[in-house]
Image 1: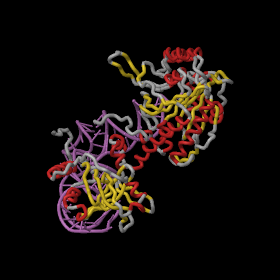
Image 2: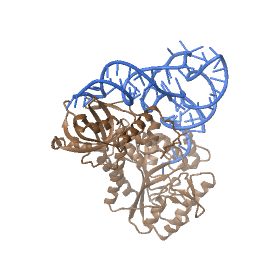
Image 3: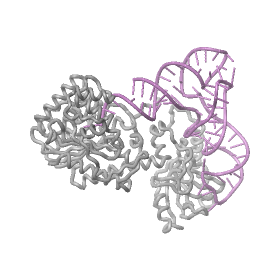
Length: 501
RNA sequence: GAAGGUGUAGCUCAGCUGGUAGAGCAGCGGCCUUUUAAGCCGUGGGUCGUGGGUUCGAUUCCCGCCACCUUCACCA
């Protein structure tokens, strides 16, 4: 097979291909079929006492090489960590040592040997056997490390954000804290699942491709099904399908899934992102508020070891209870204005006075939303629930039992950013229909994000949905907080990028 | 979509007010059988993001374009 790729080989790549040819001449298979490992690097380090002088077989990628002619030290990294290996020509034999001479940083190797400490005290595998498992044909970014007073100091870190995101495999190979963030991400999702499964909720899967999109205010990605010759949308939320399942008789269902919103990209928005939605029958938003507080606190303790964490230099404390502030109280606190019960024009005037960017066509709900975003949210650093939103902003939420102008809804904010949204779900099909109709009016008036009327969803509600509490939790944002990541791209393995070239 | 910033060797970066580029690491050759940012000696490597313009001459100045970052807009 010819590899006739267009890219010109630079010198470093030519050298590696030449070494590959040499290995093949030597009858060495440079892309091995398997290798039997009996320990990870981490295990060898952690269990040194019992493994000292014993033989172990480990495999990994060569991260550093220090050759001294007839002997050499190298560090190899597997998924558990890195460990030093020591090779001597008179131990591994001439043939294997010749193969070793043809290996580079970035190659994947297997080593069998005995565990010792070197003169300087580093736990090291003294190789008895050395095998090349995979020849790497491209230069790996070399990151040097030094341990200084217990701290690992890194030199020449692979830091180019564009390369890191486009070639995440390199980022993961070379930057251990990146790898760790994604391990933590996985643990968080596992913890969410365990928490919900432990309470008897059923994990389900609902359509990603939907003939109507709903459950949130956002623009969708549009696609086309050829055989049915129809337009389909990638979901912007799971809500309407999950509620149909509550109608169907499940007591509690949740879904952890990708949602897709055709909107801007910034450090807290990616066009595809992960959401956890949960619906619980016979409960209301107070139940859900308690659940969020408890679940997020439990996850923080499990993943970070403490409910108090550090995020971008700020101390955040997830210990329950989190402050609960009614939206109009928060507005009062941060604007000094009592905006409750004010007319649309009064709100508009207030927004102008507060220098919020409002447009003449905005309805009162939008205006309030704007003021909250600019004047309230940035202050909500410690975990805080903002409760009881105006009804116009929340077409799927149930009216507040004490005030028909509000809905029973809360959002949790941490570090000034929303992490979840929940409400007592609207189960009155007549009210739901009129809310949809209002949305359709707003849509006709030019609001592209107003929600679509979903007749089948209404039909389901007409069959009767029990009282239900619902929640949407932004997994990416939770992971950002618990991994101290400034950008959502640091917690999504392959963030959306423009194509290369 | 707007403004600002960045783009130089495989990686991390220098390059002053224009004279066709440097370092460290990585690579290659040599010495070296307990090194660890290994060391010592020697050495190769660049369409300076891309396309134009100004100029005798552009990595450097000007304009367009591309990508990334930040902020804003959009966005639960």
